[in-house]
Each structure stands twice: as structure tokens, then as C-alpha cells.
Length: 363
Image (cartoon, rainbow, N blue to C red):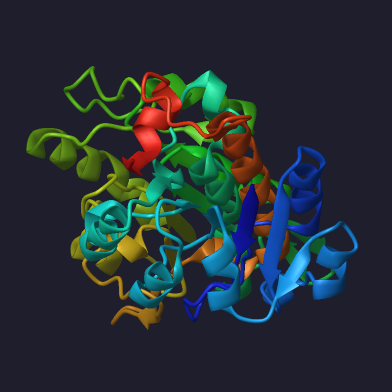
């Protein structure tokens, strides 16, 4: 069975779906792997690295897609790429079907079995396939680096001949994978860190990383989905959350927000009034920028300086900014999914399997 990997066509995408090491593992399992020439270049994986492990190199995307039984990508294919794919083949990528309905329809029309990696369920069996957690790890780490680079302050405390420099105060909103990684990274840089999450159960995880967990009475107890994600709050609970966070945001030098709702616009959790009360020179890193942002002043892909001198950093596709390790993590997740998806008989869509049934979009 032939696996095809092509150069990502999205302009800000520097990752590659399979690294040479991942390809080597698949070849060892009996697959053949064809990679478009230059597909790994932006992630620092040269064609020679792929041929050294037994891959073949295709000159163009058309060459690779036309021969592939399974296409492995990072981003959703565009219409031209779908047209090049073999009928009745398979596709594994981050599909985001809710905003790519035309692509999903085109895949279905060609009989292509499409598996959306972002829909891998949060269960123990699927942890090794969970691209959202892998890429959130990258985003949480990089968010802290962006804040540190933009800030006019040191993160750690310094005792110098010129006096004692106090450490930066960071407030992390959301203690999922990205938030926990941001906490850990900010603590490593020496910052004082506070964090809040609507799920009280994460308090122990936050405190284990050396941060203070901020407790806010939301008036609701059931704030976590069966999959472990935060639930969307009622309007009353949102109001209580904002009131409880306001003082912490005002006193912070850096605020990192990670609040997102799958398939919906990001919730607005930092109001204009909160921003207006922040200190001049403070930083907000909004990791929900791609889905509308956690503030009304977030502009995806830009740094916005507010009237009172607060910088709102709104990165998009942040995982792609660290393409070497992000590609390695993504590729490992993908290999683990393929081991479940493919049997000796070929591509086997066992829809009674909770992982495959969750991520299968077209069959």
C-alpha cells in the first residue's frame, strides 16, 4: 500500500505530515512511501533524508497524489489537490470539516475515505494519536516565548548592583494542554504564574507545575465534557468568570488565553474594560485568534497595541512556527493512527471502533 506525502500548499504551513523517521517506521511495516520533492524542506528534512530510509521522491504533487492509496497531509487539501487524488483512496489530515464543506463534498464524490485528525477522541487508547494535544504543546511553549520577546521586562527576578528586579507576573487562562505547557514554560523562565480554568479538577495539575490556581465561583458544577474539555458556560457563569478574573488580569504583566470551543467562535473572556485597566507595556497572547479571539480587539495574525499601550499578540498556526519538532510529533500521531486504520486486507474502516468512528468524515 502506497502512502503519499506532498508539500503543504498553505502559505504559512512549514510542517510536513511524515518525517523521515516516521516514514522509516511505516516502510518497516510493509508500506511504500512516496514524498514530493521538497515536501520536508521547510521543516529541515531534505529529500536525501527520505531516500536514505527507503522513500521514493515524486517530482510533483500530481505524481504523488495520483499514485497514493493513502494521502497524508497536515492541512486540508485544496480543490486542485482533491482532483489529483485517486478515486477510492484515503486521506488523513486536519480536515476541519465544519468550515470546509466544499472539500468534504468533493472527497465524498470521489469515494475518498477521509479521516480528520483533529477529531481524535480524548480517551486513553487515542492519546498516542492526539494531534490537538501535540500541537497545543507547541503552542503553549511558543506563546510564552512570544510574550518574553515582546515584553519590556525580564521574566525572572534579578538581584543586581542597580537593585532588585522583580519577576514578571503571568496569568494563564485555561489549563488544558496549551495552558499547562505555558505555565511550565513561564515558570522555567522565572515568572510568577497564576492560572484559571473552569474545571476545578485541574487545580492539582496547575499547582504541581508551581503556579497558583485561581478559584472562582461560577455558580455551575458541571463544567467539563465527558471527553475532558471545558464546557461552554452560561451567560451568568461567564459574567462571574470575568468579574473573578478582572483583578488578576489588571495586575499581570503577561496574560495568555487559550479558551476555544470546537467548531464555534472563541468566547470573549477579556473585555475592553479589563484591557483598559491593564498596565502600559503589558502583553496578551491570544491563542484563540484563529477562531475569533478571546478579546474584541484581537486581530488574527497581527500584533495590536491598544490605546493604553497593551500589546495583543494574535498568532495563527503557531505550531508551524516550530516545524521540526511539530512535524515529528504530528508524524508520530499519524503513524499510530495508520497502524489502527490499515490491516492486511487494506484500509479497514471499523466504525464500531470509537476512534475511527469519531474521526471518519467520509467513508
